Image (cartoon, rainbow, N blue to C red; front, top):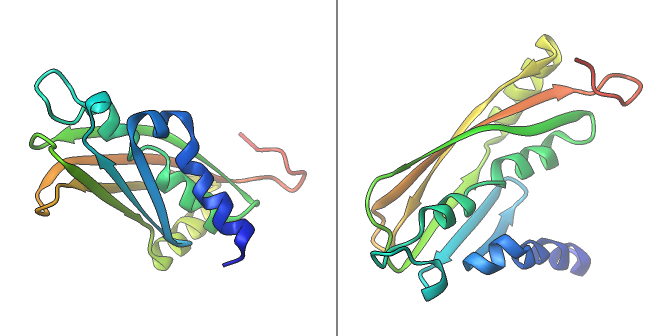
Length: 154
């Protein structure tokens, strides 16, 4: 990976909502991000565990960003809906892995080409340092092809 690409990938960690919440992301490859959240005084809730908003924020953009990169400029990708289920209190450092396999990208591209649009669903677990599930997030994305003039149809 070139130096400017590494620099660009690290800039996401300076995004104010991530920086303020203590969220750190690391791109593993073009299909995968690992995101960590360390419990600090500024991201604790009233009972001393991870604030739910920070847990959701650490999960928010990754599936959309990965899919935008993998599908390229011929497609529009938007977050459409999200849910988060809090399973157990988050303490210490929590992490989540966001990954889209190649066959899933091919399926999404095929559906968007055939139907004009598709709404794939992705999910990820937020894990504590012992591998226990702290929260589960589900994301519904909206994907469609751009028309030939480069303007989105529909």
